[in-house]
Image (cartoon, rainbow, N blue to C red; front, side, top):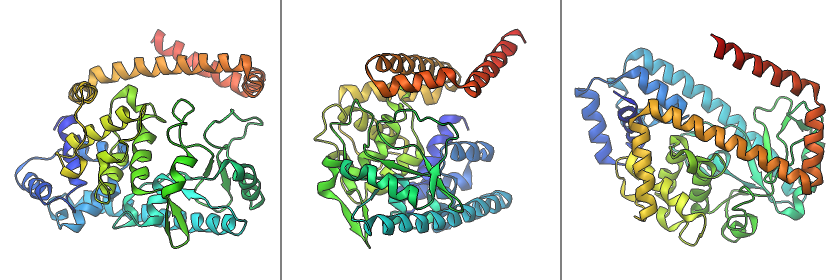
Length: 370
């Protein structure tokens, strides 16, 4: 199995609980096709869907076709993730209670929001990093003070912070499993006027004192997290963890209608939906608006998953372009913005940062000479 075949196989496995056609095809493949289990593990772990695969295969009784050693490993990883998510849910509820007691309503986002609302049949399915939530700009400063007063401290050991547009620096509390990010924005500055606290607050869902985004806004944010915040629109690849969330949410609302009123965001979101539709074997709930832009996007997407060697080279060039673009943007902002200027000066004076850059330079030189 090459990368594309493995990617499509893994993606299809994620749908077998809810898509009978895909379940039949996967069972047939398991019975009659030689599966490259090393690639299966590699792709699913890279995309953070390994536990979700186990849960889906277990629910439809297909684990019997997998190697016993692999099943045992899947059980181990899934059990660990389930325990981690139990602690994340407990921690998020603790934060929720603290803020509600101070007349602040946090809106929980992405993986944590999905866990709290019960999106998954098994909480072990979703691999979650930080606990993300957004509050109104009026409550933002007070929320930071309350959270710090509750025992949370900055994760970064640096004495200065990069000026963040979207959220405050990551915070962590001793004996709590996850770091938290307090958001005042959902998107980078370029797109923030289209999708923000004010635009989502009108359609919020409340579940047992927990507030999350509407299903339409959850679909949009699941895609935005990859396409915009992680530059997926440039790389034109797919993140199965995000795509799986979109698939589950598409069973609760019409996916392609979720972002019909967007202007600048519509094409990046529709393009990701299109790649999810193709990768998940043309599931009807993932149907997208067929446009010239989406067809061009899909052509590049298909070329990239079919030729991984060339894709790595292309992605390396894109990464370098984005790095330079980002650094130039920081320099330009530092000319007119005092916060950015202060950060740049602190960075230049930071001896630890200088040592790290020197170390990276020496590694690069060694590689070029070898």
